[in-house]
Image (cartoon, rainbow, N blue to C red; front, side, top):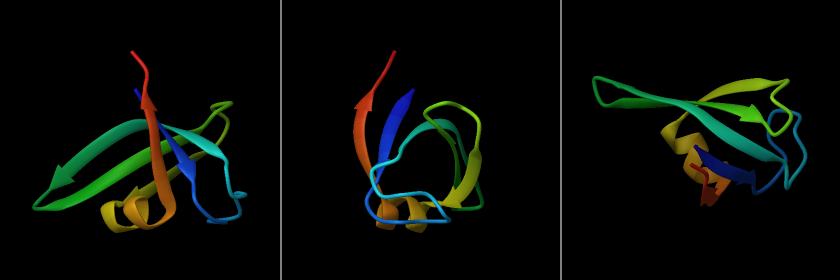
Length: 62
């Protein structure tokens, strides 16, 4: 599982909020990612450009 951190305020979440990458899918060249907050209470679904623009990869957890 990968951990990402928010670079700036996004969809009502504060800068620095940590998210777990739960799911990653690709259909006809369009990648979609599902992220959950650290406490697993909230979920967001974003595309690849939003992930690269708003999130920083922190680490991979096994």
